Image (cartoon, protein in one colour):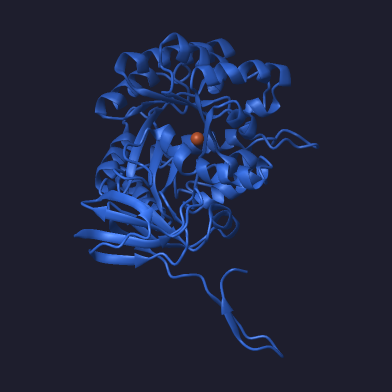
Length: 423
Ligand code: FE2
């Protein structure tokens, strides 16, 4: 007997009337109209069942700290970094753990079941590293967390950062991070990329660098990151996060770069909510959007995911762990408004992000983990349009969160009362 049988589901690829059979936390079959005995059945009512949302770029050590110790007045990236520097000495492990656990609760409620979070390793106490390693362990039954050792103040610029980063990796941090555009000079940025890629190659780790988070068209560390990926045989294992300078680069330069990135199987994470608010701050008008060239990267064969990056922290005062909000902003900023492009934006917060994290057992296929979300929407585009309610969230076949359907009742003068939700 099956543990769970979901009936009448629509899948993200458009298949309708689908059944999903679950046993021992795994999907044993995905097929139309299956009839089999099950302990529990769920009628999806023709609505969308999707693999869980995945956030490939987040900062869980800073989340929910908005206003501590003060608010970012200019709203710029650099004031945010300065503010984070003011907050760091005041952090306690207990408070970090508490805020991160609250955020993970929000995430699960929104069907977000995997998060790659950067963790600042420039504090020699490695307080945030210890806190997030503890959180990773505590949330493991319901959420996959992957940690990136992120030298926020620059691996060469900040004294002791390299040793701290190595200690963080020794403690069990999964991925090597970096921030070449924040080093003191362009040359040191280049040197940092080489140094960190070599470290990752030695240790057999993935790489995910904040790369060229700037409007400076001459910030081209992504070239070096791509070349190092190729030189060290790290193809498919390296992610460039943000890469906003590509928005402002010369078109000729980008036309050379895209095939090189595809050749090295680079992955890119754009962070639409943050890029549209932090980039272009030094412009008057016209004001650049700043997000990297998402449709062009996808067309070149580069895997692109969208990340949330920040929720209520020194850089961004909004956000709620809703990856549909992230994708909704992404499609607007990139003008990806065709039906096909909107579906690509849905992929950017699901399958593409799972590929960045190299998640095992992700997907709605036989043999995958029974992790999925029932949405109050009939297809991915409607899910984006409505930032649809997550009716039910399953992890390994068990219901871990549910939210009542969004229903409005109208009592309008001269008309009969009506109840519905698709408005
Ligand atoms: Fe970031």
